[in-house]
Length: 354
Ligand SMILES: [Zn+2]
Image (tube, rainbow, N blue to C red):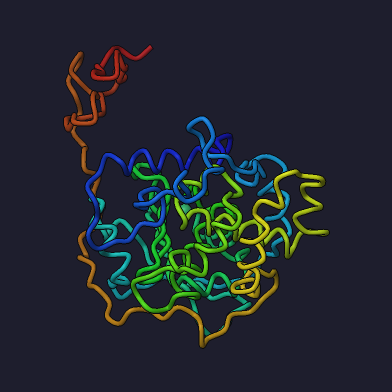
């Protein structure tokens, strides 16, 4: 996954979402916002030959020079973790896990207390099948400045078998994603949604990126720092946040990262406005502000205590089917001396082991 750019990953998320029905209780911030970043009606210069014109700052590129160049400047913080043993789960984790067809019992819930916010923990609901360890997830989250991290209260980490890329909501303060998406660059983007939906707009529902104040500065510029940002005002806002973080922590700021970049001025109004309303949150080495930290919704959900069991323990017969299309629900293992050989995308068969 590391060889893919975040832009590609987010695009995959948008594509997956397009095939699904609208969700009535979750407010996705990735991929399905109803309005585009700009249109020829609002800004004739923003579309050229059917494509959005945007500065290519390349900050979404997981290689160089963008994310890696600045996220390494975010210090990690020490933390302690404690596993919940009360068979309960925060309601936002529970509802999303159920919503996507996973079993809450396959997730473990932890309090994670960071040294930059020692009296108020965050919660991580981690799939027992997630690719990164709890420590790896918590370490990456520790690099989010506490002033940004406080916009969220919980993180939901799915296994790679989740059919979504990464999603974030302001509702209930939850950020969710596959384990492989819990890298610092993507997390900065996702926390941008949380800042947008909570720190700058605490009353639900609503996001700052939907206010006339923000839309005005967008129209003054007419450009987004990333291609992904052109998909909606919310995505643009989150990626302007990444620019602002670079501006604030990278030596010499955004101009030093992209010297003589011809397009930096095209996002200048947005960067300046973002800086004025949220720049204080986008600083390294901050501590949390308990008066602003996202509170937990009241009430915990009981998780059934059923021990997780493999869903498919049957063994296919010699030369029998052991795999197939996504609708295949039969056995996927073969007996001793036999191995499962994929013949085509729709059929796999037990054949003598080589
Ligand atoms: Zn997003």
